[in-house]
Image (cartoon, rainbow, N blue to C red; front, side):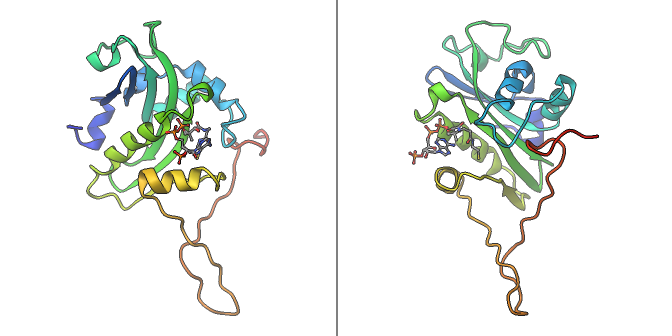
Length: 198
Ligand SMILES: CC(C)(COP(=O)(O)OP(=O)(O)OC[C@H]1O[C@@H](n2cnc3c(N)ncnc32)[C@H](O)[C@@H]1OP(=O)(O)O)[C@@H](O)C(=O)NCCC(=O)NCCS
């Protein structure tokens, strides 16, 4: 990693491991494929969205695409036109992670996914390690955060790979002060199960 975090928007970074590449080049991400992933059961926290909205979301995020790239095309920095993501048919989009960040003080990790057929081979660990490598270059970062419902697998996974810790949410009892942070949310229209905006 040579560039500073905000520079990743204009100067994408690549990591290579055998036939796989992680790239922060947002223009590589095949939007239609990502939307089909959002529709899948494993993406229980998301639902598909209009392509224009998804494109804007990606452009406003720090995205990590994971690709099977046997010819190492991506790591040679061969640029394709915007949204002509995988013009080279030998490159397959196989995983994703997205950071919602101001590139300085805060980073929220979401949409972590590896294609089901490739899970369990270390790719998810590597993908998230690349995210963590970027996080560790951010000197003014106050907090990186994520939400998960998968206590059994994901909580130990993020503890191990990103050194994340659980936030303690103990509400006040018997008039005593509360302990730790309150993590708060209000689910809205983009979340599964909430319904469509009237
Ligand atoms: C989470 C995920 C990205 C891990 O990718 P992967 O390529 O299978 O990861 P690895 O092979 O590097 O390692 C697997 C580790 O991830 C853990 N893990 C975390 N969440 C998991 C999940 N939802 N499904 C399977 N394994 C998961 C496994 O327990 C395993 O831990 P171990 O190495 O101690 O055995 C992948 O399983 C996935 O896409 N799951 C569906 C989407 C999801 O749940 N994303 C995370 C939301 S917080």
